[in-house]
Image (tube, rainbow, N blue to C red; front, side, top):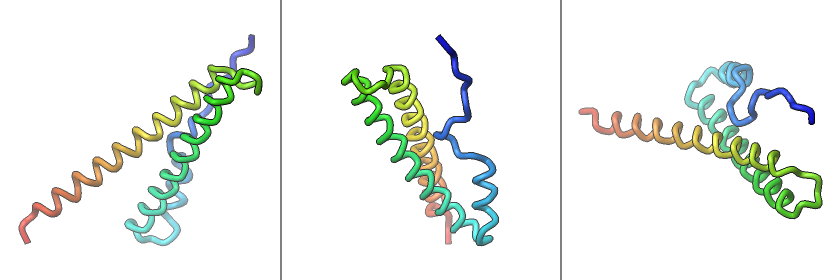
Length: 102
């Protein structure tokens, strides 16, 4: 049985990618929106991949082990939790700004 090395997870954003996004337009709001949109698409892709691998592992005839399906599910869950934390922080900031006196 061979053991594969743990590679960087696709669930977490790559810092090089974040640096590239930050230099495109110079507008931090637009850069954040682009980064957030990309992360939402990546989270959706991971969810779909986890579902597909899970179904294939349950069928047992497509060469996908249950371990691969579990790892994919964990990556998708981690990505979703990250997105929820970003959303919660954004809402906290919005509420704080709205409660400031004019």
